[in-house]
Image 1 (cartoon, one colour):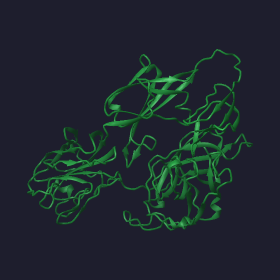
Image 2 (cartoon, one colour):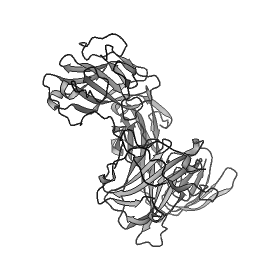
Image 3 (cartoon, rainbow, N blue to C red):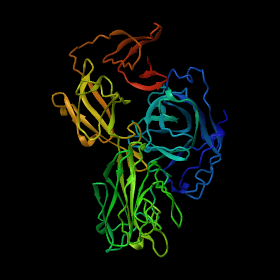
Length: 565
């Protein structure tokens, strides 16, 4: 495969001068001297890449992704070389490009941030794994996994992005290689390979991306003052829902209010509202339907050619958003609009604007009628476009969360695969495995529950912890205001005190059938695992148990234990 044939659009980057002196470039791929080696790597022991059945395609190539970005006016990445990776459908969810560093670095208890420039030809979810060994254990393999890190923000396809990974750990650990996992999603449904490109790996103390796509821009500095006392926005609304704005006291042209979230449903007809003090101005409402971080609308000096994200307006060139004739003194009251039936449930950004005969979501910039002088204003809010039923499920986490027990509905059914009415409270209970007690439950609610919390600066989910002591008669009620999207449960169970002074290791056999199988060993335990045909897959001793990677329906537990469904 010629990996260079995958050419994608250039992304967004700030000049290199934006980086402080303490930032350290770990690898830039410009010369072979900037790294020890690069190769395909998979942490899954039975991956075909570890069994020498496949050889991954990871190589340094000429940078063809150096076009000028239309939003910035310059090329985001003008380096000569970049690293190309073929994301194989046969690799696990921890498959990627392993970069052996020329200069290893030490982990610290204080969080450090590794910035990796990445451009993917397909939407994907990244991860970074640090490999190395403890300084006081020279015998420890240099490929020992020392951290797994998820990025602080979600990536986009076809754009260069500075993907930021927070990294922390105990002192005395040296990281010698970095595994850039180019797609941490399970590949079981993947039908074809795709290309991902990597450049400039930098260790920094800064969490903010060195470059980022500007989201929901306005045509002025967002701190621009509002100077008119006779004109101001008092509140905005959607149907019967309202959110206070108070532009008269805040004295800002642009106000971002993401605390009050409006609710709507796919297919619902809603009316946007602006409560306004003043006269002879016009109202506009935008909804980022594609969740791409901007409000799109096509227009000319004579009218709107494609509404796109402009969902309602009271006046533009003699018409309103329904296509009816409007007079220029019609005010800010807008017609209703209908949310698409196929709008994906999620959190969306909505913008309200008071301006004069201008469809630009960033505000009028005309010399004789710019928005900073005409007394207008721009207000951003969030809208939760939700289904009538939300999905609920139990998940697992790398530190053992989700194992050794189950989360059930009050009727005794496991939560996974069930739905519950949006905005309505319900009860759960737990079912610890034999020898375990509930410790606490982590509850995450909203959207994109397995991904980053922020999408285009819009929060996607919230998470809170419920202690075992908060369960009443074995049950806990999920509050109605937390049933605002899908819900993810991760129960944590702890071992019951056994009272046994010298426990004896147990010996048992597990036969693998359909469904997930998890081994739990409170003490050192002898295990044999066979498949349905009776062939021995694993024989050995385990201590504890947790799932750490998925590969073609095969579960790898704690690095050695093989479970097959």
